[in-house]
Structures are given as structure tokens and as C-alpha cells.
Image 1: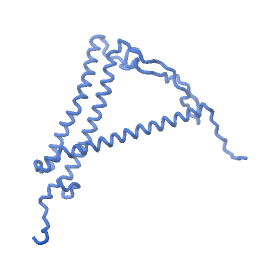
Image 2: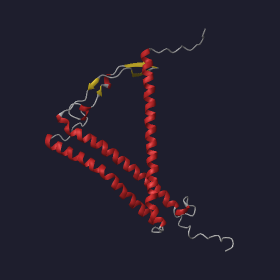
Image 3: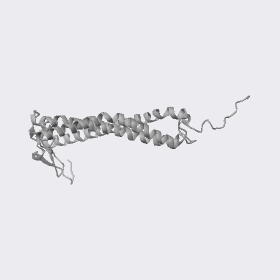
Image 4: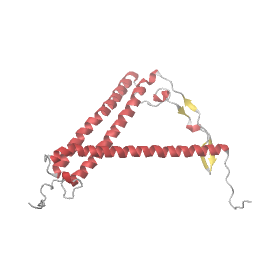
Length: 223
């Protein structure tokens, strides 16, 4: 009934499951990337607004009357805010460094794998052997066909005490510092934009235009 010179593609049940899993994983990755992008965009907007707020009073009160002065004060305020926001991150990372030194002094091991499954943070994680996972060929490509065998189940090891502290500190402190740095960059971009517009007659925000008070006024009718 159906005549075609192209062969009909048939997939086994196992191959169909693999394809469905791949599609779900790809969609999941797109969703995660999308949410990260929205979070970054929201942070940029929020910090840009904060940059405008922290410079509003000095501009409207005529404390700053030049673009150079605006840039200098904006840079100073931005760095001060970054220092306040990043201080907890530096303290957390410092704690990780102190624990590392203490561990090295006690064990005499200054180079060790923090994520080792026997003596590191990996001991309290599920680990799978992806090197020996079962694979099948689909569309000429070899892809994972089954969940890899389990190498480790979570369990505590006394020798890994330092890793249990250092790894979370590195993750929390690093993430905190990354967010604070992004906020600093967002404010810097906004301050640069404001410096180029606040003292320009074609200012987007007329209430901040330094030339506004010097503009000729239009006499009202009957004056």
C-alpha cells in the first residue's frame, strides 16, 4: 500500500526510551539555562536601578556638577558597596583556607583530592561509573542506553572531615562572590550610562539634566 524508496525507520523499545530520555534532558537543560538568564537579567536591572538611586541625591542637590566628578564618586560608591556585599563571601572563603591549612598541618597532606569517594567530599555523594555504562547505537551514534552502575552511596568518613567543610564553603563563598561581582558590573555599566547622559541636554531623564535650570523659560500668557 505504501511505496517508498526510503526504508521505514523502526526503533526498538529500548531505543525509544533512550530517545525520550534525551529529549527530556535537552528540554531540562533549556529550562535551566532560561531561568539562569532571567535571573541574570533581573539582577542587572535591579542593580542598575540601585546605581541610579545611590547617585540621585548628589546630582539633584548639585553636589556633583561635572561628568568627571560624577564618574569619580560613582566609582567610589560602587566599590564601597561591592566591598560590603562581598565581605561575607571573602570570610567564607577564608574559613575554607584556614581549614585547609589545619588539615594539611595535621595530616601532612598538602595536596589531596577534595572530591575523592574514599577520603573526600565524594564519600557523601552518589557516584556512578560512567566509564562502564551500557551504550546502544541510534542513528549511527553511540549513546547511553542504561543508568551506569553505582560506585558509591553516601556515607561519612572521618578522614574526610576537612572536605565536608571546605567544599560547601567554596561553593557558597564562590557563588556569593560571583553574584556580588555581577552586581558590581551591572552598576558600573549603569553609572557609565548615567555619566554620559546626566550632563547632556538630550538627557533621557530630564529631572536630572544639569542644563535644565539654565534653559530659557517660556513666559506665560498675561505675564
